[in-house]
Length: 194
Image (cartoon, rainbow, N blue to C red; front, side, top):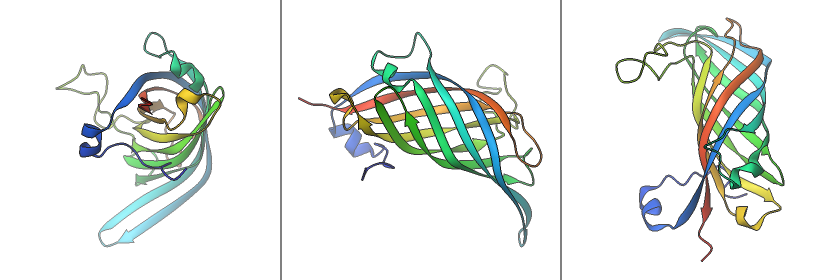
């Protein structure tokens, strides 16, 4: 587990390494449970923030046609025991989040980190169809990166999972709570075994 939090993102390493990729495409449904909230004030520069801690638990189901045959082993449950978010002012404003995950699949377990932005809309004009505004509330978007830490399958040993997620939740001033749903798109990155 030494490389548990390491993502293969060094350009020279990417250029010289031979890996195999398999698509991961999952639909997410689950719960976001608020476990703590802390309001903070800073006199200089003057600001007010809300820090929340949640437990995120989602079922990861296959999304055809993009899910690969190797991805079936990752159907299962993703758990983030401590998802920490810092909001500007309150839970209805922009924030950023991070947490460590455990992904329990079918004969495989991965672990790593998620991190991203909260209450933002990246799918907006003028580049994309106007399905979002820049301050879209009730949305978490970010990156997931981790490593396979246990597996029954030789082809998954030494592999990593990398992807992006988009989760919709019901925003609340004091911190969200309740059901969530989302999408995950990524890849399984496995070392060449030649």
